[in-house]
Length: 473
Ligand code: HEM
Image 1 (cartoon, rainbow, N blue to C red):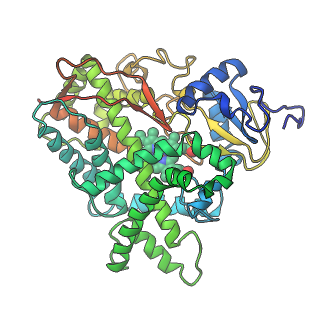
Image 2: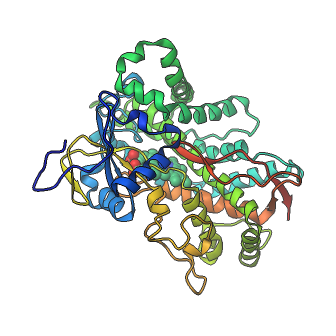
């Protein structure tokens, strides 16, 4: 690994133990912090070993941009994990999120982007769906009557309903127990799927024969796929190629079109994985960001009242917010960006892998090396942000209080694997946030301690549970 190519060397890193590599030297429950400490010692591009698997961790805006954008063609693969095969993944049938960089991923991603775009232009636009769901969320908050409550699962359900209405053509009531269970399972699968156990099982695939371990790691994912299968089966029963109701129908149409030339990409198995990907990637992320948003607003009531004031002036109290209002709400827009920057909800992005030998910041990185992109190091890069560790919306405002874009604002990553749902997520964040703050003032419940604002890490970074009071304005 330390071999040289054209004078460049493999990135430095901590010395590793035989067999385990650096597996026991990092805390998988605080991975971003472990990487932060290692980068202080070894620099912006350092190496690391999980057992015998070689990894490189990339930190800071310049190195991350070079890796994701300039070297995108070389770094857009995903590591293949033995556990994936056990979940039914095979060549060209791996959905999008964890798919290897190749034909199957390209076709599924292209199809999904164009289908999402088509639904945006359909008879009920995506914007309308989000606004309607935001109103349902407001109604649910109103029933709390100003009493303390934890907004977590209401927000989760509302956000999930947007992606559900695109993928399944349906939304779920906030008291639907089966759906609530599904949302809990999804959270659970994030926790179990990103801890130490699955890493160890990937290293020692023989462990998949231990039923207890298998159940622990796979059960949540299995449950999600079962839920998808049921919904897809219902769609097949009522399928009419002349009317495409949602993403699943669009996929079934594509399967029909390619039936004389069947591929693993437009197959039932790939539909299950892709629908699961959209459901998973489209729920937890946006919902966690909104939870950070409510938390920051109760922690910083001055900022909340400036948001109220701007919404009152530009939209008023009765008209529903629309995306066209965004340009006229520079402060609110800056606050939403700062929520994403500080919330930093996917601190290590998703794992990448080199598909050929390449160079990053002058270091040689051979084909097949896993790459961790440290997004925290970009969103909180102290050379680029005036107050990297403070909630400071002025990061996104110029001297005249106009909104300014910042290059180091990269919560959706960048390059070929950039978040597929970025546009949808931005729309959801803006419409949910403005609709909620048009209607309510949010406060810390009386006699309750100030909620903590440090993150809980389990692949995503989320706030610790907290309660709020929602007073109608
Ligand atoms: C991938 C962030 C919302 C679908 C990603 C990645 C990040 C990210 C960092 C990894 C990019 C990489 O591998 O370099 C976010 C954030 C969101 C959000 C911060 C909300 C605030 C959504 C939504 C959807 C979605 C609403 C639903 C359509 C996906 C998919 C991928 C992805 C399918 C995999 C893309 C690929 O591998 O080609 N997202 N995401 N995301 N996201 Fe999002």
